[in-house]
View: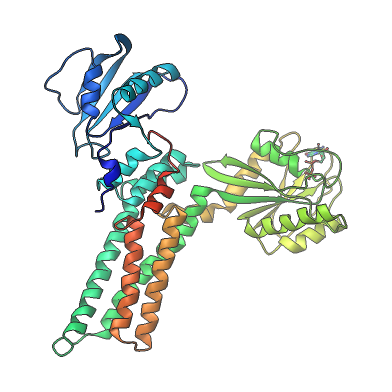
Length: 450
Ligand code: GDP
């Protein structure tokens, strides 16, 4: 494993609990000087520190008691980071935690960079890159299901599977190399190689398909709200969001921009797009909005087709219907508090009043039902970041090349190039090989203190 020499010998500290007041604040210090620095601040002198034990002491800096705290000392490599480390549990509060951090810094630590604790854990081989990314995902999880997958990954599910595939590929490669080196002695069974390679490719493909679903879960299911002007799309969006993010007015065509909101419905994270009313228009600005709406529809996982019970099904509705009927849409008749002028479409509809909130629960239930397929098949997925997803896709491409090459009878030394490239992708995926740029990108998403 490559070592990050410049950072290795430095001692850094950060507040690890969220900003604000809470019962307990956590400050962490990591690195070779960490024990010495904390001992200097302790009210009691303890010569023979026991690791992973809780010490209750006062912290004193510049002859002043900062706080009464609990301390846990960790000795490398038995810590989260794999370095010497101390965790300080002080009273929660912006001032107290800051003062503890200040004292550590005054005594020789520097402020940690974003994600630096997790980065150390990775560089020390405590966790692989997929696990490191999962830690970020756990903190950031937008839905219960995304959290569940992130937890699975932290336990190493995806990393382990990739390690296994990597082993299989290495075995195949070894067989090929031996036959290249000793062409006279070793006869290679091409069929067997093909079958083994194909088995790996099938597994990778499965991961990619699951991964696509997994991406939905971690970033959200995209839902578009479409309908002619004034059907109550913005009102509905606000109902769903419980806040005034969209402009609601009486003038047709005012919601010109695609306004996004995010919402959790029954444990599923939705990204909601309120779109401009789709209709024939000569207004150039409105035209732009309408084009955006159509694009939004194409990207959406589910479309709410909002219809107005006061107007009934009009030509304008027909115009929209023609454009969305081949997508995953759900007809929603709105304003049923005033009128019941509704028409059945091919798909069973839902009746609501965005204004009074009537029928919203059923609508939410129906929406979740309709995206169930995405969610349920995503549940088994381990792939949750674009980086991992893309690496798997590249890996598959190389495997596919190798298989095609075998089929048309290419030489084994050519085939082995693709296999090696696939191995490189696996290595990048689990972090056996990595660049500083990649690490910076990954860890810059973290907050300081993680
Ligand atoms: P949009 O153009 O589709 O976004 O429609 P808006 O959300 O701006 O709503 C247009 C008008 O219809 C507003 O005056 C809303 O108050 C009204 N409206 C929306 N939903 C309902 C509803 O369920 N019942 C009634 N009676 N009026 C509604």
